[in-house]
Image (cartoon, rainbow, N blue to C red; front, side):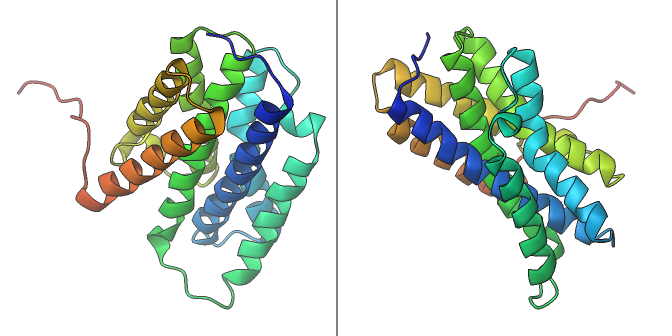
Length: 211
């Protein structure tokens, strides 16, 4: 399944990606903030988180990296980092609150990654996994830089809901649903499923050796 770029499709992709960059960068600032990093450290981690997953996706798909082509994404990541850095000084933010913008980033980047992959002609299964990678790799980079185990490997349903949402998005497109509407439905499904998994501590089985 290949989606042929048109003005409406590119417009939807632009705004989905911009939202993804902003919320992912915000989650990084909140995570790094509890490590007591200075402003420069917070900004670096925010940029790596907000732009890292999409950068890896674009390199694997052999397309121009999105934030190099349009620096507005870089500016959005930088702006998000500075705003949250300042906001945290005047508003009390619970330590686990970063999981909410993190879930939003997972949802929006998952949809954006799948959409981009379909636009360059990737097979549907590969496109869905590209959505997962786009949605999760920024968080993995963030956690490594913060010297903590990546949330994706230990937290309640993370990559799982991203993959399911990416497949849902592709399924809706196969049913000839409007791309923007399909993206909203799939993105909300990922976001809500992730929050429910956190709320009710729903996990996949962990690896165990037989004793």
